[in-house]
Image (cartoon, rainbow, N blue to C red; front, side):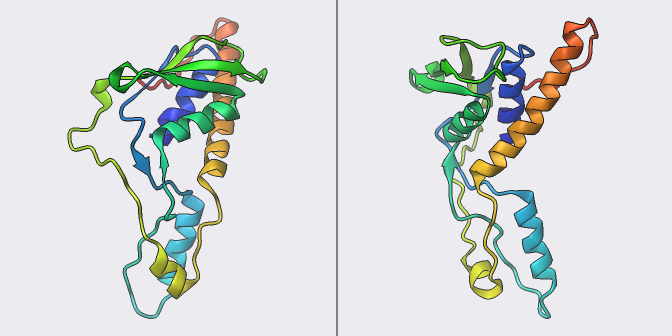
Length: 177
């Protein structure tokens, strides 16, 4: 879902995609960076006796918050209006030349019931206390830093595709339905 959000908003900022369609914006998730998780896996493998550990940050954020962070990285301030399937993310302000194809008033995030999970888990939160207590592992990269890293990379890709499109090259662009 994180890649869908960052790629979708980067594409929207460059005029490659009109809108990001999501399911439950209020779902809570425990997002962590792969670098932290791989470091934890390496620490687990250094133990003389195999044990099970939960690899998680122990902190959760809503899907809506992740969308807002992603938009802010692009210089877009969003406001959400409506409720449930009628909820829409509307551009409140644009403060960056990176968002060349959006303007205040544009509806760029919509809720689509097709993306509701049949067995929705409202909250996902791991308890990494055993890893912290026994191995001294704590995540070093925040969810916001991870988001910024993802948006920066997806923006570079979207800008390349937009430039090629402007010059008449029909390149496939990964869009999120």
